[in-house]
Length: 244
Image 1: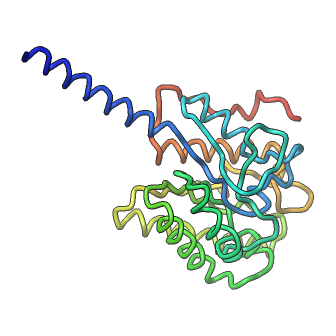
Image 2: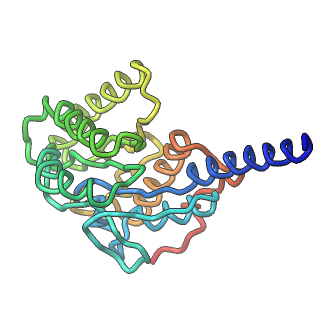
């Protein structure tokens, strides 16, 4: 009888552990943002999303993208990217409706470039992002958030505004993490590993395929840090993959 109970207990423990691992590996990702999230600038419209999914699946995650938008020939091309829109517009016009509908458990947020391009209350961009994040956690309390800094811009005036917004985003993440929040992490797209000037299209704003590959690698590392890693660690190879 004791042996039977111990066997049952061991089976129960194993089942709980397996369920925990499975939950950690099942990513229901909402790529949230504007035209860069939508894939503008990439040769086929997939943006960073296909490269990122390949890397995550190669690392053992099960990935499903969710969102009301669709772009690119990739399978599961769902996203929540709205070209031309600013932070508050994405929040009020779309996220408040779509987030409760799709219920993601992880967000990759690249948003605010249009606030910089349109010179829209740049000093308050961090506050608007705070409001967006507050809403996301109200609608999906257990979701993880990867907030990216904005990619560099070839226009000097716009780039100066990008730098200001990025500092606000960095402060936002640091403040929340210092308060004990482990559900958010920063993905630095503006550093030496992110798209450089040569990786930005002639419009000065949107990455080309090489730039999107670099973004995907940064997303990959950030997601693993906040969602937990698996035995495999291979990310998308920006050098070996053939341009399309």
